[in-house]
Image 1 (cartoon, rainbow, N blue to C red):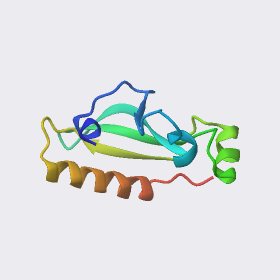
Image 2 (cartoon, rainbow, N blue to C red; image 1 turned 180 degrees about the horizontal axis):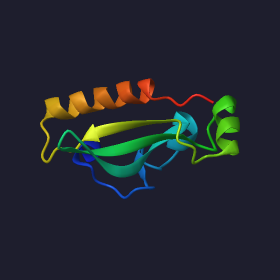
Image 3 (cartoon, rainbow, N blue to C red; image 1 turned 45 degrees about the horizontal axis):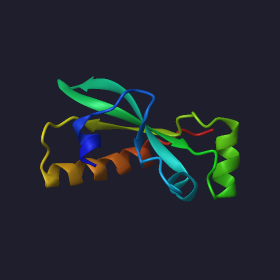
Amino acid sequence: MTKLVSGNGTPGERAAPTKSGTNDSKIGSRLDVGALVKKDGKEYRRYYLQLNINAENSTIRKEAQQDSHRNLSFADVEIKQNPTDAETEAAVESLFDDLSNNVEAD
């Protein structure tokens, strides 16, 4: 999670979870790295929630087969160099809140 808070990554690449084993099929979704965003003088990294084509869940799989690069939601994470454990934990909590609040309706 420190990687997310540090803002590392190239836009369009996967941020999490790692693409290994059965992660894609079991989890069914992923975070992709977005652009850097400035808000109130602070720098944030935008992350997008996308679905995986090979998800075990048939509903997720069918939706992903229509457009696996569709951004279902997004979250902006404030970039911190050498974040503390508490800052990382707060950022992850905020990320999930943002993803929940920013879901795009069809």
